[in-house]
Length: 252
Image (cartoon, rainbow, N blue to C red):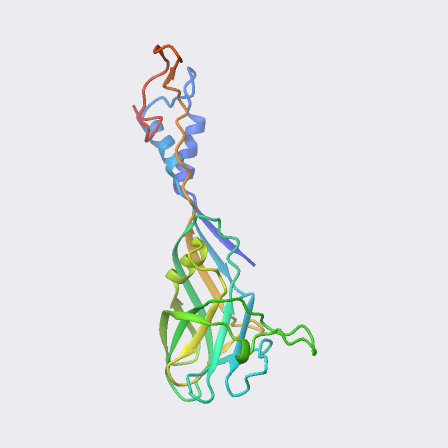
């Protein structure tokens, strides 16, 4: 499910311009109408998208390196040298238009348990693709410790101190994905020491949520009023209409 909200205050005000044109032509009749028309050209849609379910999550276990753990309702992350566990998660961001700028992105994870007390969670970017789980008993393509993706240094970190939802700001990581600076292979979770268990997308409730706010790219203003036409090869110039500022065609 995708939830989208539009901030259309500027657009709504500017739309009044459509009902306020002069009878003599398309140029707004007064400075207020010209200002509204400029706002319409310059307006950006401010949107937010909430993805209540990740498209894939799993965990890999150093002590059982050949096993796949992609279908369980929880996943563990543990920084122990012998029993190390890494969590993996990916969200689909294809609904965000190309060229958009991410203004904020928050990952919400539900802490199911902290068996040994508080710990620090680090969120890194996966450097290659991975598959959540095997398709059947004979399939071995699901992610395991043995074929886990490499990952970058930490983009964000947060202290895990108790159960319930914890919220981590990952704006720079999501912006890198949306801008194309980094391929979206998802995230890798690791801890500094103690183990933490999160609820996965397979859990009946309190699953992972990624909330993203972004701005769509701004279209370049189009000068709706022709200013001049150079006749070639003659140097004569034909001019009609009124000269307007290139920044806003309605501004005198």
